[in-house]
Image: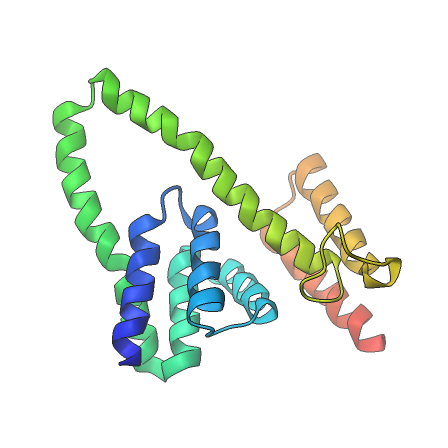
Length: 190
């Protein structure tokens, strides 16, 4: 039963993940934390970190990670298959239709209309992750926190990372590796 539930959950994620992996984050979060309770918010943040460090799309890495945690190797295979099945079906249909009707103004209008929704999905996921990184306690929000709830080390690491990425166009892998090493050092002495 868990395999069918896992396949269906990741099938839904794969089916409604318009805009790529970052846009899928709210869907993944809703399925694995809110509905199925397979992960808590801290584990979800770890999942995102691991998904960023490993090659491949975030949704597929998340499916493999959650599947492995919940049901071992068979769970990883089933969750990953659930995530990719809708994409395979949809892309085959859309490729055929797009090449046949790509010059229609309604198709172009629909694509332009989807862009703001994708941006809002990415922003929503980003805000959730940012609040988890900034606040020491899970569930703290900007409206209800004290100065003791703020993780200043995380804020400094975020600022340094943004500066390196935006100002010097640093390689994201080196930035992640560097902040990981700093995190090991700083958090092990605290």
